[in-house]
Length: 76
Image (tube, rainbow, N blue to C red):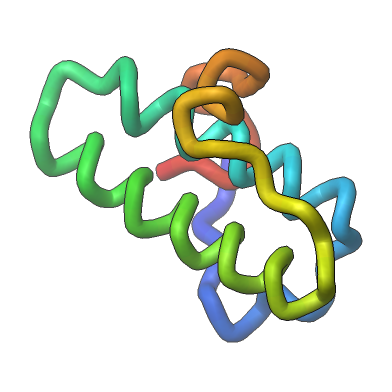
């Protein structure tokens, strides 16, 4: 897993960003530490903003978390 910079998001497909969003949401919701949870919530917001800018319908944060993978690609 590598760290993804917010300004690099344009290089990813909508599908990849949606996967990153779901994974960051899942990790943010399930993290035991507040810092890890907050980092992933911030990343999820960045992914959602990029998806929104591309005209993509973004699922609710908690619905996305149900579809994500804990510590999956796009999470921190």
